[in-house]
Image (cartoon, rainbow, N blue to C red; front, side):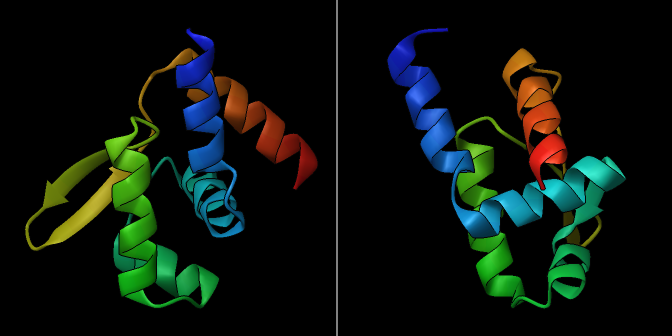
Length: 90
């Protein structure tokens, strides 16, 4: 992975709110926006914004389930390493 791509991914994932969101997804594999908002006591709009940013950068994959949008982890080596790091240090 090129250094500039890696740096951008780390900046995207490095936000405190995004780390909390990632921890929820890491523990549940696939989760919908409203469930994350409830788990973290955050607004759906804020959670949705963070999820869209992470999805755009390839850290998450969005899956539509009826009216809900859920997110899951891609099978990507960086995401797997990120999970090990976050779960180890949370």
